[in-house]
Length: 163
Image 1 (cartoon, rainbow, N blue to C red):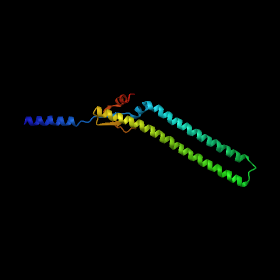
Image 2: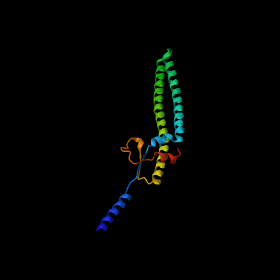
Image 3: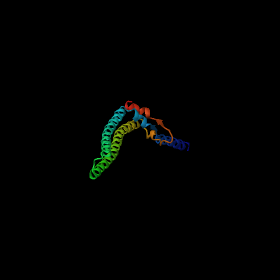
Image 4: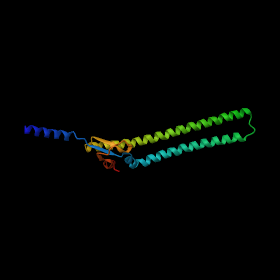
């Protein structure tokens, strides 16, 4: 009887040990901010933004010139005034459309570059997880980690990425 109880206790102990899960968490946002390509990505977005702003500024200048000419020219006939008014309204519409398109283009570029960096960090987290036998590694940067149990693997992922 003692043997059976001892065997049962040992079996349960072994099973519990084999079913133990190892959890880790890392601050992906912090890691992404330290990547060397982050600065290059920010510069690329800034360059695009400057290019689009320059284009927008030239459109606004042309609009302002056309509006000033319309307001100051007293020799225009009724038909010419109507034509210029329509032309100015069309310029306003094109400026608004350009602003929307530029905003979307900048946002898409940021998302594209960030997703590449996030994918790189995730791949490193997977490698750390496999190498150190973690069952789960959670991203602590998004604020959804309710309990910081487990090990902070941020330093391990940084090491894996060489930062």
